[in-house]
Image (cartoon, rainbow, N blue to C red; front, side, top):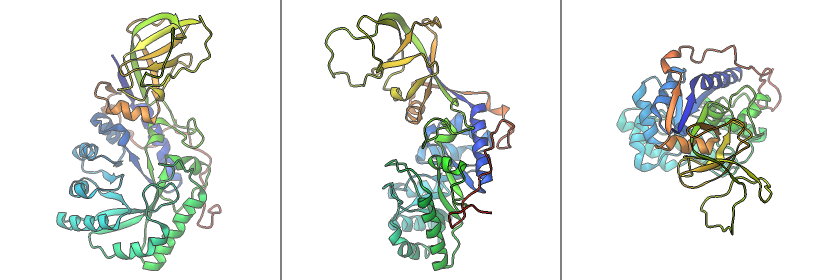
Length: 389
């Protein structure tokens, strides 16, 4: 049997650690749940673990969250489309926006629903994804501040989500200055700068994030512990929340080099780049997880002696070396997924998802744990770019 095991103890550790970092920076944060693909049991687990603000970009996933409880703050994580505004506004409290026409329509629909919708206005800072150009700020805000059923709670940005631009202090300070400019011009408070993501966490831990950056949207760091800037893990986080267990259906000693002429007719890449010599042999295992199930290149065997040789649609081949673990038919090989592989696995209806331990065993929630590693004091930068006293 192939299954993806989701360890709640390890997830709670990451949640508590990130929550501690946020409190040290005097910031709030929202758990980005889109990689969970609306998996109800995992989302209910987040509720049991104390998470109360979730962000997603799929209506179907938000509907699952909406059915769980009423005490959640929900964010729509991508720009709303006109054709689904009524549903989006019924399911979410906050959305990210950059188009005046859509914001006007949000105002109209919100009025019809008898509610006020909160918006974050996204600003383009160089990654060339969503966001208005800074030169249009004054004119843009002059129009949206007139809308009755819109509450503009702040400004935001996505950095590194498309072009891979590395977040910098200069970019974050630009947002601080834009916020101050708008507040002076319109004599209205913008309480939030939502510019933190998993890619900004390394800067946060180094004390290089301005204190006015006071909201973070965090997903990958909690789910996988990833340091998106330097590679590897963020100190204090775990990378073993998710484990793919794939069953072996064949195991034989074979040549490690294909026999005969090879072509590029295979639709998927060969992954094992080891420099084997002619005649070299080793044990190769076949598992029934293939490219239809996930991005095989995004899987890392937990046993570092193993290496994925390649995969077709339905199976993957793993080189086991001498197989000194004495693996047999029916045994499982364990893998850690990266973000792309995790999303595909969560979407795959052929892979069983197992949440452990039972959800009801959690009552601690976001209370600090003795295992949470607290970094040296996170001293945020003030608005002049120097350490705040």
